[in-house]
Length: 80
Image (tube, rainbow, N blue to C red):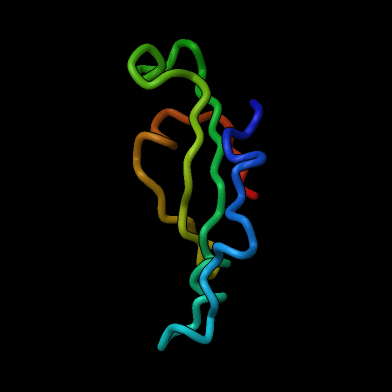
């Protein structure tokens, strides 16, 4: 599956400057990961949600928090 995010990065001049926030912006942004999932054709959700899904998750301490439809009936996933 080709990631839908390739080539859509925010230009450097448009990115937020960490010094403008009262929290650790770099830490927050580094916790967001891309999540790509593949689902079997026979899966209950395949007809409705498709067999190739992509989105984002928030990762911390080895755990990922994601929207449920991305991983429902998933057989394989890749986070980057």
